[in-house]
Length: 87
Image (tube, rainbow, N blue to C red):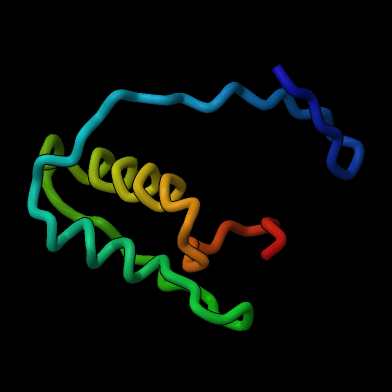
């Protein structure tokens, strides 16, 4: 477990959770979410879409699938914006 100190506050960072999920829902929804996170130019700020729906419809799974897909595209220069990440 990694430890970081920010402004005198010690934080313990958990290891990332990796799930073996595959998005089997509507492909168009996944494309729309990825497009909202896309950054073409370093001055771009991505959209921050709100996923709404009843419990159990797959909002978290969709977000996880989109984040996984976007990090798997190592050959693409178009990546989602992550606060603090240097482009």
